[in-house]
Structures are given as structure tokens and as C-alpha cells.
Length: 355
Image 1 (cartoon, rainbow, N blue to C red):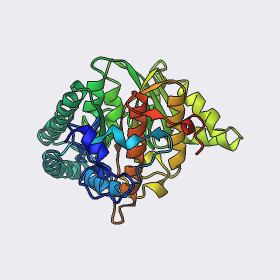
Image 2: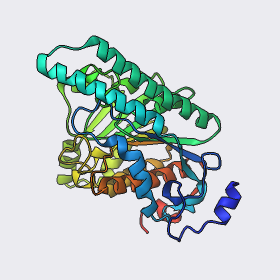
Image 3: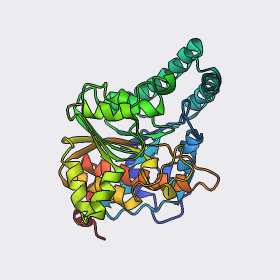
């Protein structure tokens, strides 16, 4: 089906009946933007559940209305999800079983099983290779790519691919700094994603927002980064607001730390836990849903370009509330990336954020 036929025959006001993400009539061939579903949680250190996020968000997406007041005819750009979830899902189950045995032995006798650890790190590298390979395929064909995790280790391969030919900064919204070096021995731990990202030469800046759980080593890494890493803790942001500073003004100070090209890495636990109660490691505090959208809107209104994004650590739970929140974030961010890259137009309402 051509993109023209898909859009001309589709009613965006009707109930979602198609299998695609958001019930849209696009395949990875006809879509301009592709979501890589990374069903992965092999090295999680607390609660599990994020590996089921891609499928849960896919189902929850059918309840998302397609009108976007800030991006004109956003759905027509075309979003599709890469169909292969099974490869990583199977590898994740095998690797998670190894990780549980490793962590149990580590807790009981305080020693690392080097053989098992090597296998786990090798499996995690296979996951990264899967993301790199598929991201490269879609990027080279001119498509926008985003990652839907899984735990926060999921997007490393995409960020590496984006960094092959361009320099950019990362806007990182999270409850955790994720700057630990091989946390618990796992080179690709979810708690090490930003440490690993900072090894990428073309990542010029890391700007963290909403951080409220972090350790001494991470603070030292930030202080010794010569300004390459900037941490806006949740407490500091809240203190500024309590003293009367507007969220708009606070956003401007965050944006001033970002370069022209920006990648958004969004851990859902960066939000208030009422919006993600089932996530792996919820922490009191955090952003409201609209606060986070407003920040990203302000990034784009500043003239900066959003080159890609990921959403991670969505764990649906029994009521799938988290998946519903994740699906709406996914749609909003995808539309903003499309408009930022000239594939859609920002509406007049976008300029004021009032509609």
C-alpha cells in the first residue's frame, strides 16, 4: 500500500481497527518514522516488567486520539513499529535467568561469577547489536527512528548510530542519573546507560532533568566533566519553583545548556510516580505529564532540532495505566520529532502552547 493510498482511505476519527501502532495504516516501508521495540530487562536491579512494555504500549496506543493540537495532520506523517519483538524477547528471558543466578550468588557470598558475568555482558552486546543493525537500516533509508524499551539500557545502539555522522546533545529526563560504571558488574546495566553514552565522542553534552536518586561517584563524574554533563536535580528545580520562578523560566535555563541538535532520552520514572506506579524503581517527586511536554516544546521553540528519542522503563502492571501514559508520550514525542525534521508543520497553537 502506498502512503498516499494509506492516508486517503483512512479515517482518523474512527475507532482503531488496524493492527499498527496507534491503529495507523502504515508499515515500516511506508512510514516516515519507525519505532524499535526493545523487549529487554535483563539487568534490572529491582522490579521487573519493562520487557512487556512494547507490546503493552502497542495495545494501549489504539486508545490514543490522533488529533494533535500542536502538529498539523500529525498522523499523516506515518508511524510504524518494527515487527520483530520475538528475537529480543527470547534472548531477554535467557539472559534474565542468568542475571538472577548471578545476582543471587553475589548477594549470598559477595563474589562475582566471572564466567556467568561474561555471558550476560555478551548477551547484552547482542541486544545492542540488534538495535544498531535495525537503527542503521532505517536511518540509512531516510527514516526517523525511536526506541521503545524495555529498561533504559535499550537505546544505546540507536544513540551510537545517530552519532556516526553528527554531533548532538542529550536531554535526559529521569529519576536516576544512570552514570554508574558497569553497575553490579553489568557493562550494559540500565543504571549505566548515560555512563556508556558519554563514551560516544559525538555526544557533546548531557543535560539531565528531574534527577533525585544518585550516588557519590555519579556526582563526582558530573563535577569532573568540565561542563559536558549538567545535572538539574528535581530538588533544585522544585526549590526554584517554590521561590516563585515559573516553569517557563526554569525551562529556558535548562535549554541554554543544550546544543543545536538534541536527542531526548526519557525514562518514565522521571515523571511523578502516580503516572508510572509500576515502573522498575519509582522515586517520589518528578515532573507532571504536561511539564515534560512543555519542556520539549520549549526546546523546539528555541530553534533547536530534535533528532530522535527513546521512552524506557514503562512497566504496564495489571491495569496497564503506565502503558496508557507511555503511549501518549510516544505519540506526542513522535509528532514533535517529525515536525522538527520538516515532515510536518507546527500549528499556530504551538507557538503559544495554548489551544
